Length: 332
Image: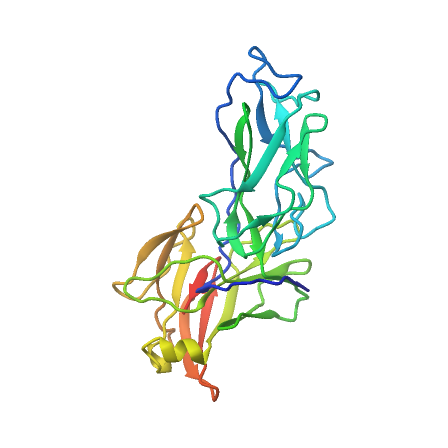
């Protein structure tokens, strides 16, 4: 397991809002040309993230952990770099094009309020700009990067995810991990992962609320991840959100029985049952979510997502135990 250092945490209970595949979007280029070669008023050029081939993963950014180098392969900091190419109207790389290409997190697809570090402006070599040391400092599900160059327009990457930690799973033993910030910790366990898969967890970043309930914890996200970075469907989780005594005392509702789970699940997933009058929607990054407070679980046949228990420990922390499914965000 490789744990990445994270500086802020979010207080939502979010179960892995992953698996959101992006489609590259190009803005219309102008008739300007790049540097000294290859593009002209009659040979219009634009930018693309280099496509995958049978032997290479291409240049799209892939998921990893916070403050770890983002490459074109999931959780592989030494793999090939993120790459953006100058192409002609037929999609061919213009190998003699000379351009300076800048890259950053897409302003509308920053689900963890992260900051991109590394060399963010690179000149093309053979018509391709390689970004070899990029990283993001906050976890989040559904980041995108946008690359732009004067006269060539811009291109936006597919979605990718940044996790606080990625735990290797070894069934038949359950896969479990705990992550913590100064005021919030989240523990999640699943038996849905198979060999070579991971349990991804994140704490911090995104902000949302549920009806009149205002969560105070950091947001908690988690999901099962395949070796290639995909998200299998139907994963089931048991999770515990621990809210520090300092937040409990300042919240205005010190009793454990008053604490709720503010849950967010992508609108592409089957809608979950929320407490009456608390259902709503939120946009996290550029993805739409259904939100709401979780109902209590049935004692005989609990159907996730739902809350199993609310307790306060001897230290004064509140612990909320809940069942989750799919790829949610969670706050308390």
